[in-house]
Structures are given as C-alpha cells and as structure tokens.
Image (cartoon, rainbow, N blue to C red):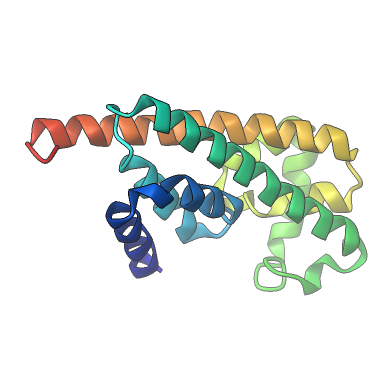
Length: 171
C-alpha cells in the first residue's frame, strides 16, 4: 500500500497540473487507510509559494471528501438491514458497533469528528445512512468536516513541506 501512495505522490510531482484532480479523487476515497498518506503527500507538493493553488487544493479536497462521505451515507441507507455483508464491516464486524457508539456519543458531531478518528472513519457515514440521519443534515456536517480536515491537514502539509524544502535547498 505504501508503494501505491509513493507512486501517486511521484506522479503528482511529475505532473503538477494534475494535483487538484488527484487531490479530489484521493479525498473521495480517503476512507481507505493508505489513501490518506498519498493525499497529504500530494498536498505537500503544492508548497507555500503557491497560495492560489493551495486554495484550489483545499476546495478539491473538501468537495471530494464530502462526496465520498455522501456516497458511503447512501450505501448505508441502501444496505441498512445487512451492513455486516458490505465492506468494511464484512472484514471488521466490530466496526458497526464502534461506529454506532461513536454516533450515539457525538450525535451530529460524529460526522465531523469521524474524519479525525481512523478506527471509525469509514464507518460513521455508512452507519449515519443506516440510522437514517436526515440527508441534508448529514451533507452539511460532511462538508463542514471535509473543509476543516482539509485546512487542518493539507494546509500545514503544503506550507510545512515547502518551508522545509526551502530550508534544505530543494526548492
């Protein structure tokens, strides 16, 4: 999996014109564990010197992440009666109970906070859909969470990596 992340980062380094599109796709699939590493790595290639492009990257990550969550939410709605048969629950059956407990404890905030909790990252949107959380409420929380996560993780990656590259003479 690390090899795939490294290849995606290498592709982005060789083709900077594709960074925003790659960020969108990676954010859509960020619930897959190794994808998050590639997402942050690709964002680090933007650097602080290109603030306009950084804004596009944040927007691409926000839209991609929210659409990915909404897709999982719809999957949960459609499969509410047999969640144990679909990924990731088929391989990790305890994830249903953990995600339900997380949703019960945090309520609507679980959708936002779930982005920052690896163990339930993929489960929260699916369980929210299965529990029939109102779609507009879920979408609003998902967009807010995706924006917060993009700013919290991707902006520091881009600024920090760019600054580090400048300090060691790679920029």
